[in-house]
Length: 401
Ligand SMILES: Nc1ncnc2c1ncn2[C@@H]1O[C@H](COP(=O)(O)OP(=O)(O)OP(=O)(O)O)[C@@H](O)[C@H]1O
Ligand SMILES: [Mg+2]
Image (cartoon, rainbow, N blue to C red; front, top):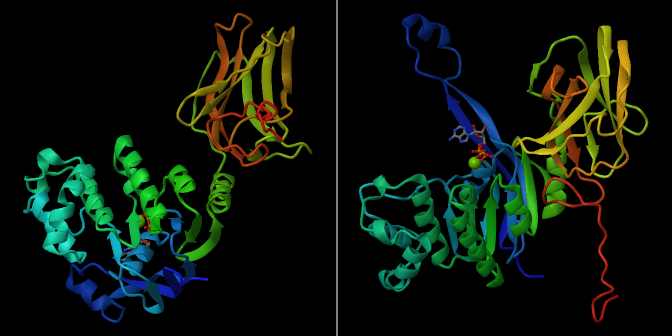
């Protein structure tokens, strides 16, 4: 087997958090014997290897240590313990505009950055037009970069970083910054580098990008390596754990005449156990608990399901189903049975609405008040909001099997 492009071996990185300057003499005296700083391990004993030509993703929550690890790879930070080995010419795009000089023009900064990355003036002359074209900043290339927007910084920084033909490219979070067209161009460039056998390490919170770009993914949690493996496996597990750990507390709002009340909504699995999440394709019962002090005639109960973006996915009700009860009083519940949940993994807000028969007068409307998660199940689809539940048929191919 060929030599790995990147070896991270037992890396631990400590930061010191310095206390603020004491403001009064008394505080100074009181503090005297305490340490002026606290120590904090941003990375603890992280080890992995990246084979040459791989596109490797680093994921994890805010503060989990991703940028710190990338800076260790770029040798901007030195770990307290462990070693980092990178084989080949390295180029990194780390923080916004890092390495740019604000007073200098875009053009001057391209030359400055290129020189730092080890390119000669002649190399840069030869590549300059490509760099500018990639950045799309032709009109701004001779103005000082201090006037650039954050998106413009990223464009220029990225254009330089990838056009110096690195063997190992480190990229922190750019995918999130550019517009859609720039992101597309980055994705194409990644592909080109990948085909040329270059190694790429990407940090981003954009899970769809990681899923599509990366071969392998490492998940960091509080500075430790939590998972390492094929992109889809690690990302699915990560998303599922995020969804499964979130509290089921819908935001929502409420109105109505108050003649009857939707007390609460329960989500039950196949065994009747209350759950906060379900897998795509599993059965689910949505149980709506009702209470009415006075009899209420022909109440219509409805449900609504929204994505967090506010798109309504569906909204069944008793009247459409032809099942409106004549009257209801006291307490009780109504179940909505879903044999196979068609929702794809994600978080959804459920609404429960109690109306009069004409569905014009709300008795109790609890809108997007019950939050619920769906995690990966069967079918293992990723894109969109629902599965059509369809099956594929290859029989029509000439050579179909
Ligand atoms: N220079 C520093 N001094 C002290 N603490 C720091 C420093 N840089 C980062 N940290 C802390 O180290 C931890 C890891 O930070 P890091 O920036 O690596 O996280 P991250 O995974 O990149 O997060 P994000 O997704 O928000 O970019 C955080 O708790 C952060 O507050
Ligand atoms: Mg970061």
